[in-house]
Length: 315
Image 1 (tube, rainbow, N blue to C red):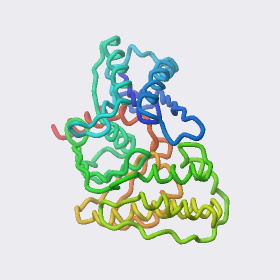
Image 2 (image 1 turned 90 degrees about the horizontal axis):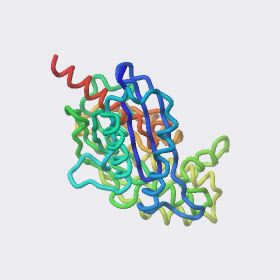
Image 3 (image 1 turned 180 degrees about the vertical axis):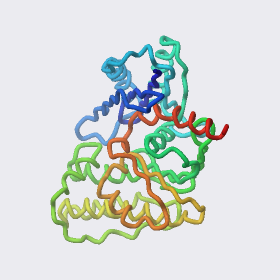
Image 4 (image 1 turned 60 degrees about the vertical axis):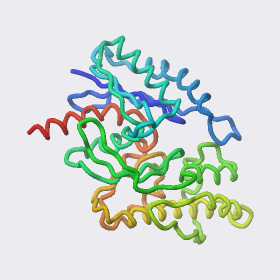
């Protein structure tokens, strides 16, 4: 029996996962959200790196399995699978993983954080899905990606997204104005659960594959003294879902049938349900809500997905 250890150090979460490489069984899934002081709207990279360095030994020590069985350590070493892609937070996980790999005399594999999200989305669906659209919507990213499976990970090309702020940033900025803790999306979603909401018109969704969102921060900010929170939040979530659908419709000419939607914003049940009601010609794949947000499970599964793909191609 051999294990794969995945490590991801993103902008707001430290994650470690352990998977049985033969059966795919999840043996450990350790995560710790980074602390953001009340009133702040985010973390500087150096603050996030410092917290990762504190969290990694703690999460690693929580794993009770026999780590001598680890055959490969799989890490996210960059945001995207493109040349020059870099963020300091990923250095923490990469270096921690290299030390573990050297100590355990195991293999060491690097992927991108974006590939990690794709991997987490394909845990139960990776066989036979070689080309698709991948949508990554989070606090740091809103990108629509043409993705193709290759021998190691995925070949990707950005074909849509936002030109300025991300959907996650828009939700957080509106949420902090309402007094919700950062990051705000989960608290905003919980706030509207079970509340009846009169329809509040939301602005027209952007047109084309690349859209601007910065004006929406002022639009929703101007509603704060005119409407209650649940009306504004519902309108904002509806707007987000319609923008995503509009971009997908714009990209329908690329010919893809499968769309994978991941990232922290993709864990929002209100946005998910709105998208699934109007999927059109696409088959939409969402990871579980827990696996939409940052995690290391995708990294632990990517070598398994690579192995299946390469063995299948060899046949």
